[in-house]
Image: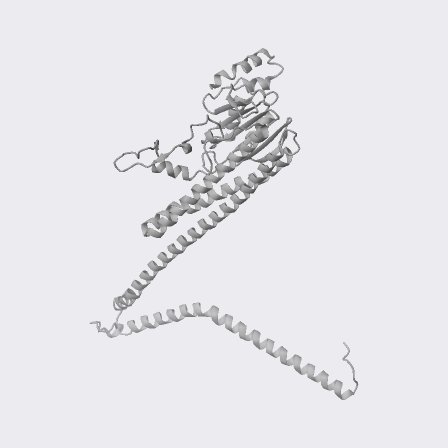
Length: 449
């Protein structure tokens, strides 16, 4: 539904109000709107297993009827204040500013705001990341308002009979022919996508008959979404391990240069943060909903099962993080081995060319007395010997500089052992002297201290 059809009534009401008495509200509602920036879904349920699409009027249901309004924020590089403006654009009125802030803020929260139960599991990561999850809900007895970042699979409802999973599949032959008796061809990329799903499609969703079942459905789809991401990571990690086993130097070097596994580890930590938020919020939601007369007891048990699924999912993410750490450690070890091998080759070349460099350096000295040369000047015959003595002295000095710390430590240890041995012998002679004195005195008993 176009947002231009939603706001004019509210704008006319604000124009009729006195601008001198409520200037802040006037600035809030007389602002630039964002048509097409957010997606909106609104349903009304009759309480008997049927639902209908309805206009975006944010009106609660009557009797057994209840309404559901869902806002889907765009995944992009935008600030949190811009998301708040989008919510103000589509939810105010009747919601107030405190309701908007409780829905859009980051971090876990569960509590009552203006008489309604509000909970959120919003991670503080960048909105464009696939590992940033935001889900918030405002629940009353006859209405539910939810806000999500991007599309949540299986969150909405669609007419039955349109599910791909209920079709009879077939595979495409190399010639492009279909098998007889089949109704739809399933391609490989479609199968890869379906294998990452741990849930059915929207057409297979059971229509909730109460607000409590709708709340369970919203939390269930959030957990399913997390499970889909974890399954996709597992498949990606399996393929990467297979590539590493079959790949060579170029592939490993590319993975190290791209920092693929550190980035994957960072994404896993973000995912763990989202799951930790759910572990904090959903038990409190169960506790607060258990005191509501309109929340069924079997739905309380369903919430408990979802909390258990979330904890098991956290353990699975921990295992994935350990696998990523192990793969990264293996690549680091491989890189160290490559560096050591290159250093070994360099050392081997140094061993070959060091004697040659020494010989050429010695016989290339511009002094007299160099053997096997034509330098016969008697005044310069001792030049070569003097240079060699100076080089020997420098070599001895350098060796002493390297050996001196070891000699000093050995000398210190020897002096310490000598002092300990001397103290032990002195104490032993003193003890023997006192013992002999006691025996000569003839007094029995214990030695007085």
